[in-house]
Image 1 (cartoon, rainbow, N blue to C red):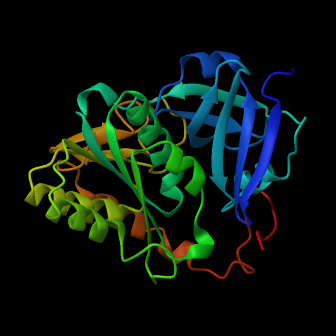
Image 2 (tube, rainbow, N blue to C red; image 1 turned 45 degrees about the horizontal axis):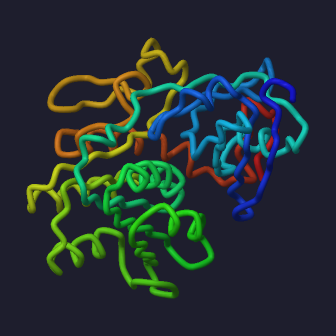
Length: 284
């Protein structure tokens, strides 16, 4: 087996792909919540992706990515047997599974379910009662339902338009479970910033400790560039070395959302008109 060889490639949806990469040293040490940084080739950008799961016997590390830019499009062009140029990790602080108690709700939103899944799995394997809440806009966007179902005590599927599972947002399901009498020791929320903000607003009302996973722009993964900074409890933290997990009740979500919104004028440009600086052509 060659270094950083793709040993498995599977399309989860037309725009979402799962890959297993041969990286035995990372597979041996990686824990839930950590991430890797890959480069497709020597000229490629460094892109962080959360570790979905590992297989220590095979020496493989699984990643799940959405094809949204030059690097993920280039990664998706590779096939089984091809090799990545770089695959660095495990990076970041592991999720503190042992401190979350015996009953935990894990709330994932959209593609964030790929990050929520390994955390729910680790909690379940540690003996906790895990209620996984997976929210998607509609049935066609659902990923990892079978895998999530095996990695928790109870899986609650939700869709915004109600065409599958519970009709409503993940926050609505979480509130429903709490009002039904479920006493959670901890809540984990991973997904869009607005979703995590409102989960934290809800859990603060019920005084439930809440962990969120931040996925800001990241370049070097060492805390040097400062791109992934986030204000937590009035202090500047860096998601790559201090996180990606943080106390959701202390994160300044408004600041992070405002910073992300500053990129919208560039992102709003029509896909067929935008010329990618890395690819030298449109991503259409």
